[in-house]
Length: 90
Image (cartoon, rainbow, N blue to C red; front, side, top):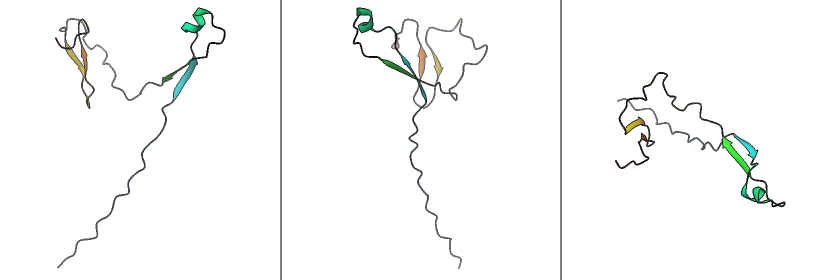
């Protein structure tokens, strides 16, 4: 009679709580500055770095002569649909 080896328990990894890198700039043209308010607060605009692993458009992909509504990309719940007038329920 052979016995099975003991089962190994998995070690759960800690969640990855890394903050995405961003570039911060001070907005030059705001409504309060345009009105001439001297005590206008500075508004900082943060833009995240683009995702380098995002799917890139293939070179030479046809965009002229397609139908009005066509699917651009599909993946894990993110579906992009191009429409003529912005109506998705055509």
